[in-house]
Amino acid sequence: MDRSQPRPDQPSPPPSYAAQLLTVTARILELMPDAVANPQLVNAAYSIATDAILTPVPAEAVVQDSTQRAEHALQPYGGLVCGEYAARLRATAARLG
Image 1 (cartoon, rainbow, N blue to C red):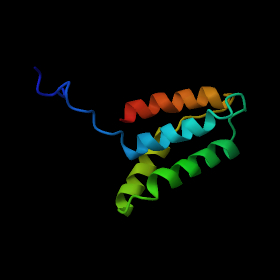
Image 2: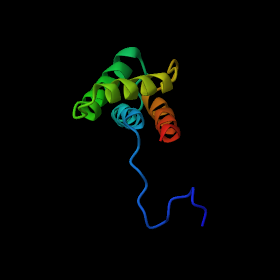
Image 3: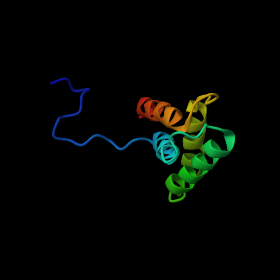
Image 4: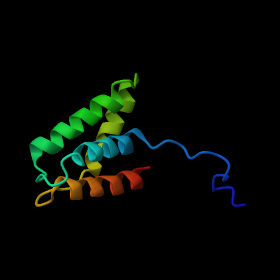
């Protein structure tokens, strides 16, 4: 077995906080899949996700790093509906790991 690969009987590590931010933002946006993605909706969903994911994190450096990584990964949403943008956020979150 390749040592770089996790053993099948061991659980995968949890996703990073940045990935969790994008995933929760996507979940919120999926509640209104046909609404046009706009700054108010996306910012509100991201703010709720940030509060939910990062409030319990005690280390400010981790919070700042996670926020920067998530915000750098956010993609433009012009012309998309929330459901489409949510799918993009999920794919980006999967790449962040």
